[in-house]
Length: 203
Image (cartoon, rainbow, N blue to C red; front, side):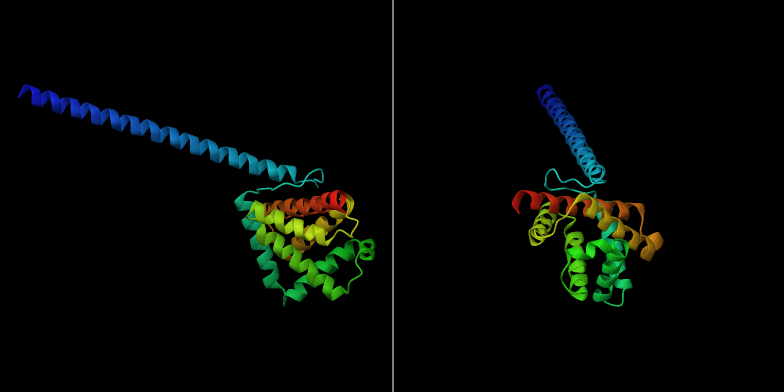
């Protein structure tokens, strides 16, 4: 009887020790996951901060915060839906760009309607790919090689970026939130910097 009681006591103690060990392990895993999330959030915040300006020294994958990308994509979708057609949306982008910087027109030899749709499709592919760093880099790289003939400079990227931002500010009003604006600024600076880098390294 005494031996059975001792065995039961030992079993209970072993189970308690195992439970404690599992709890400690779960706590450690939770802390590690939290630390990884914090590191990821910090990296994403750093990416946004870094892309407040045009970066043309290198061309690497960039991961923007999910909420920033989501709001930028929502605004883009709302902008397209608010236009009578995709062609009209492209025309609005074209007009916003060249009304603010007529000097840039000399860079583009293609017909206005064709150019408007190229702007539209290019922006659409970039914004659609923004949730995936690898897909975004491939998309931007492809567009960059398609624009090797254009002399893209930081001041010209800034003109293009600001024209797009002004257009959305005017057209979308309150729906163009600070997060959405951050997303567009970061993406347009990323694209512009990539075009400059690709032309400098490969043209």
